Every structure is written in C-alpha cells, then in structure tokens.
Amino acid sequence: MSTSKIDRLVQMVNQVSLNMSSNGSEEQVSMQVSGHLAKFWSPPMKSLVSDYAEDENIGLTAISRKAITHLATLQSLN
Image 1 (cartoon, rainbow, N blue to C red):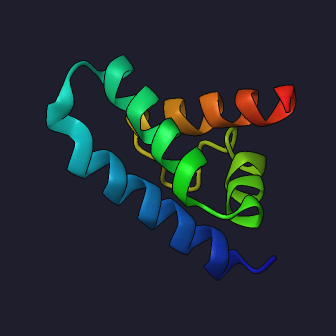
Image 2 (image 1 turned 90 degrees about the vertical axis):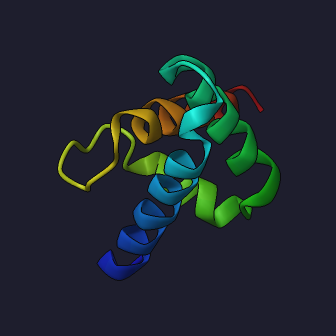
Image 3 (image 1 turned 45 degrees about the vertical axis):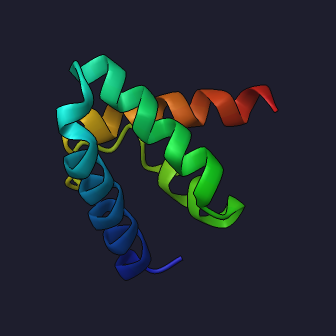
C-alpha cells in the first residue's frame, strides 16, 4: 500500500479521536475510537492502520495510538 493511504488513514483516525476527545478520559475515548473503527472501517483499512500501530513516526495522537493498539488486539483474537 502506498504511503499516501496510511497518511490518509492516520489523518482520519486522528480526526475521529479529536471529535470524541470530550467524551471522557483518554482511556475511555481510545476505547470509543477503537469501537468506531471496528464498526465502520473496512477490513483492509483496519488491517493497514493496525500494521502501523507501533510506528511512532506516522503521526498518530496518543488517543489514536491506544485505539489502534486495541483494534489490533481485537483483530488478532478474531
């Protein structure tokens, strides 16, 4: 996948995180973001962004990184 696709997904998940940031603590919001991604993102989108969960240089916010890490864990269980 191209770099522009992951850049766009990072931008999108950061936007979701920002929109939900007033919904509670960082942990609560990261779980809400993870649930949103699990529910509304396509499997290829979830897979690609999960592949980059540990990459600290792609621009994920702290909430987004926690959400992606949780999403990756959920995907590994399925």
